[in-house]
Image 1 (cartoon, rainbow, N blue to C red):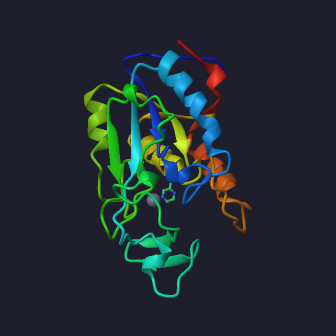
Image 2: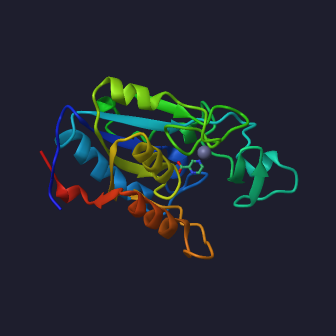
Length: 218
Ligand code: VGL
Ligand code: ZN
């Protein structure tokens, strides 16, 4: 599906391409590094507008298994705002793991949004924290600069990319996911087998369009 980019109203979103989410990192996504050349190509030759997000947790963050007595990574717990997956400690503020990959062409980002900095609330989405109420302000920024369509890349496809895509649809943006520029954590699940299958199924239902970087033309 060929797709023409409008340089004023389309924006490339680069979600959490940080050392901890890359192979060898604390929460390394399999083949996560393979997406970097694809994203760099899109930044350099396809999109004028782009922003990045950066998962940015305090050491005592509520999403870390090590901060809950007797818990282990990937356990599910009940918090005041609902279910929360527990993770290995990752993206800790001011650590190497939290830095955006030095292989990314970061000079193009017009904005870098940090999220997940509230100790007691996780934030997968770039728009709303996991309580689904606390806003990061991103809707306002995108609307103010005239954005109509968001094209997603980055990590992880089934968590921060998926939640951000879902909130983008709810906020009224046309929403796309560039398949060869994202990779999932793919945790095992009952009904859908993996969190990646669940995310793809639900996002397609919502009207999110999947395409590949080859489909994008200027
Ligand atoms: C993410 C789990 C925990 C992500 C962030 O970037 O997808 N996943 N924190
Ligand atoms: Zn996180």
